[in-house]
Length: 148
Ligand SMILES: [Zn+2]
Image (cartoon, rainbow, N blue to C red):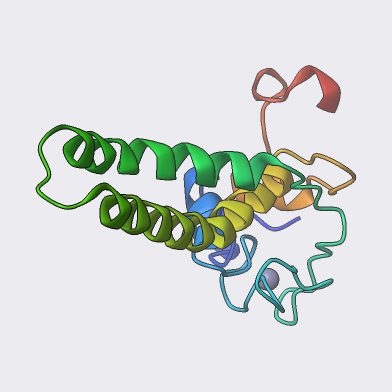
């Protein structure tokens, strides 16, 4: 394992890894795309050869997407319900279309961030080597109980 200063391609923090994943980049190296299709991650990163087949995002990305959409749509729905001069059918159409577009737009970034989170913490079979490489040699106190 190389020291962190000799591995500038690795993310320095969980936040950096999640941001790479949310942008659709490989969370480990940031050099290649994480997705081969809308919600299908590549099996292996072509740049750093990280194995992404261990990801198990399941329902968490839709949960994030629905949570964000709901909170961003709430003011618009309240406005349309309380004081909008628009007819109800038009307000409802605008809200439904905006909600659908927002949910679909948030879904891939949410999945990329979730995959990065799982990789960083070594979940679901990910070898936490990238995590360890990014942090460098950790002191025994810095390791979780599962790593001792
Ligand atoms: Zn990579």
